[in-house]
Amino acid sequence: MIKFFRKIRKNLLSEGKTGKYMKYAFGEIILVVIGILIALQINNWNQERLNNNDIRNKLKLVHRELIEDIATLEKEISFRYERQNLITRSLKILEEETSLSFQNRKVLDSAFLIYARMGPLYNNMRSYESFLLTESNFIDEAIYIDLNNYIDDFNTTNAKIGFFSSRMNQPQYNILLNSSVKKKRSGAFEYSFNTIQQDYQLYESMRQSMSFFQTITKGYTKILKKAIKIENKIRNN
Image (cartoon, rainbow, N blue to C red; front, side, top):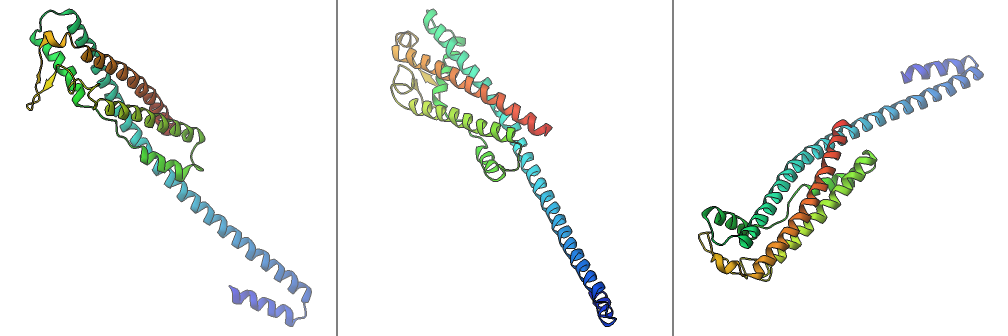
């Protein structure tokens, strides 16, 4: 193709058609520039397509992790409600009963077991944070803001759980460390019903636990609503 154009220019010069030669050369330059611009545009389209595919794949990953978080949060909220119910029933037994039936002992044992199993809820925040850092200029602004708020609320709630878990390892707060309740190596609990009915520290610890679980349940419920909202936005995006 280049040889063909060069031959045309030579013929024009040899024939003394300088004006036509200049017009032809100028037109050839324009065609070359247009070709370069088209090539650049095609390259930009391809790059944009690759970027969009990459963002879509990352959004799919975020979407899957949100679905997992929703399932985990629903399970945790149900679990917290069960713990609140156990503590409420235990306090009622301690305050109202004069003797301990087999069924009521099972309730108390389940409530005491709470103090042996404390810990934060782990999740996929690192994946979300990495996604927001690398794709903040490309994703929908509403999704970006919602994900940021979701991460903040989740971390705040987890910090509260971590703080309470730390407190529960201190003798003045943990029933199993400073009360009339003792945990055997077998895992069973040993206590006198009449004695624990008079144990002020036990009552206080259980009431504080109730307050904590109510706070955490509210926090998780708030987070769950946000997770569902973001999941719906990504699914319909």
